[in-house]
Image (cartoon, rainbow over all chains, first blue to last red):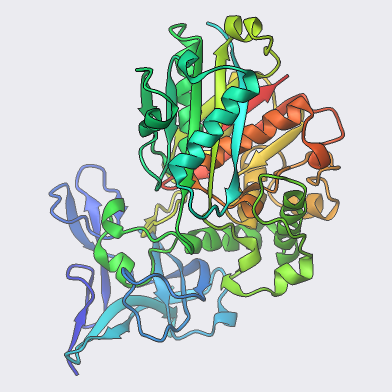
Length: 136
Length: 381
């Protein structure tokens, strides 16, 4: 089935997904996402592993627009993941029971299907899931 | 430089008023404030005001009178009222003006706010993927704070229970039904750990204040309530704010802590001198975190304070004596001025059933809003 990312320049896909951040050429400060059309920043692939910094569960449907997730609404978890030597990134959380979420949980980057467009194309976004290996 | 006094206050009840625009609610609050001090609109030398979603404040001159006064519109999200008072305070301190009005009003549709990513400098995917939700910010900031500092869901519910109790005693409040801890805890979960009775809702309302120089306040016989400090700050490096796709690893102070320290320094008083406080309570956890950010207790002490009822009307430090945002709802442009209205009411001793019984001499108010702005006002009588 065809798939495409929800936005270009948000994450790479091969061989494993990597988030694309930006590094301030002058100060070295790392940001996410990569600021568009801004020569002050160079693209930077962010670490794929980190630990859960905080989280919540989105139990009610965000307003559409802008939200484009599946109808009827399904609750989803979101949180912040601390990526060592980089930054703390906001993300959807996936492949984890809501009750298993806790601060410090080792996490790794993956992608998840946000929605399927009328043409059958799956739209992917980035997400973090509990780490399946011990890179951290 | 002259001191600045609050000589008149007026409010249009918060909540829902069908068939009355936000601007009309603002005009009614303005007239109530003028009547409170027996002045007329034509005597106002300037005005600062704002709304977030209910129109341009300066168009109020069409309803109040075309006196040609300078009228500055203020738009600072939830801190609009604080920013407007900051402007008016500075205008009188400068010595160029003796008497002016500060006004805030709003009227929002039902349900959570629905901001657009582009207005916040964010890409479309941020909204498409379901991250453009203000309540997620409050919940994630709170989740981390609770785990690190040992705050329980019961403490969150105690804040809401207090708010609805105080609201039940307050004529200008919206949610006026006392609600017990168990009902609050077992209500629909919106963003864990926050249930629907732990969040405030967008609402409607208007507030006007009349501020004067010391000379003018004495001439009016209203030199009772002095503004000891008004501080307003924007976010420092490393703060955690709404709509943040990332945070710096190096964490910093909150904007509320920054504004609070500035206000205490300006007023020459400390947290121990404050008799009552109105703290931004967008949700019940915000009140808890803001207790510490504003210097009233150490991180984690809130659990015990709430169990002991220290922030109730009869406690050592009553907080949100009119029910705060939880009971009054949040008409963005009016919310910060409601806090000041309530503090003036308590300082005057005219709070009726909600009047704090202990002597109230020094009163504190703190407003916080997106994208990381905070204003603090300290009043003394």
